[in-house]
Length: 276
Length: 317
Image (cartoon, rainbow over all chains, first blue to last red; front, side, top):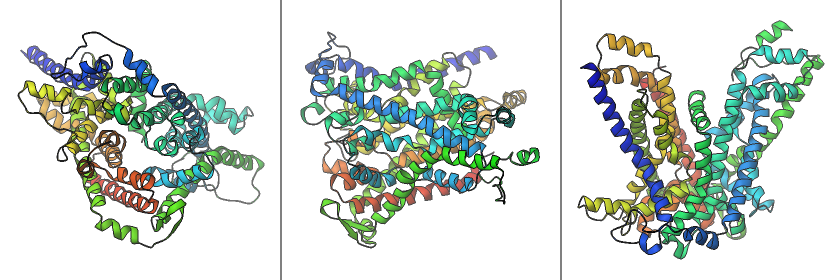
């Protein structure tokens, strides 16, 4: 009796979850299906769900009309540089904030934290003007440099450094390690989960960011994937098969990365939920 | 030395700061040097790109911009104009409607799904992966796909509706509907993050509460409302705050979906950040854009502090 009720309950839950999952995945499947249809087939009324013949021409077409190779290159370089930069700079600062006492520490840390309260748009005009004054508009530096400094990353890693036991660095000190050594050799490996979370957040944010790349880099050969997709104009905005091929290609690297590193993505998000 | 170390144990923000004393040991001075060297890149970078710009933007909000990036002081003109500017008021209205629908609905749905997933259900990780997929997808791409799904003539959604003999709906081209169509997409794409955070909150609830409740004969609904929900409030509070802040800054999705839209659709959908972008970088009225950004900042501060005050009423720590 009791067991049967439970079985029915499970069945109900699975039904709801399956339906939800279908809604979540549906758009991706539709993106894939549309990208392998001919234009006339995609624009058929009523729509056909499955293409009568799978064609790949839309992918070559999007590569022909958009400098996708450059978009990939720019996006990848930006993502890698920003991620590496943040990991090194934030962890270094976070270690100092968490483990060394120095005059002005709390004040400086609060100053960094206050940045977290401010919505991104507040920074954008001055940041843009700095890029302009440096002559960095339409360059990779413009995409990378402001993004290697992060109050969020510093805060996240500091929270983790603070939980580490004191005796580790004391032992290191006795062994004659200076602070940089202690940080780099001993403490950094100990905050690996937080580092991975930061890497994932930064990579995801850099890869997907739209507003900043859209503003600083307007020449097509310096655009990122997101900005490239957003700047599609004219006839291509209605050529849905080609566009779906483009968006699929732009998102695929992150989706693959997510599926491969899934555990870390989930842990990373959950981590900030509990630490923030 | 040992006592000194022991007293340093508390490293919180409000922890004891070192007392400046004469004749610092070289040991300590070395500590300071290392500390300053290690924080220098981040602190300098944050000062240049994030802290100083806040003051600059506030200053710009009192200026008027002309050609070639020249600007002059104009007092509170920008703010005065904003209050009478229908476009700005509409943008704030749209953003409020968007935020007030996206955040609660997304959190409610996420909570239900997270609770279901937490029932040690088979295939939990598969479901979680599928629900999380939109989170890793770039908003620009999400906007594109949904625009296609929403297409009045050839879109899949209208086709499915036609099977239920519902007439075609102009999801993104009807000014009365477009905002709500965008809201649906925003909810869809924000579920994953909330589910994952809520699920980890749920997993932190000790099973002994449930066992005790079950012994007392409490049914699933009673358990949900009297155990799960109260104990989940800290997590719910966190996702609410993060959700509010993110929703208020909506741009990417909207930008893609309303691209090439008619003026009436644009007016009824454009968000505050969209308007900011338009003034700052399209019509080059950076002073006005700065005033919009500052106003938005103030509104976000108010919303956040109201939430912080309200948390005493509903969050159980």
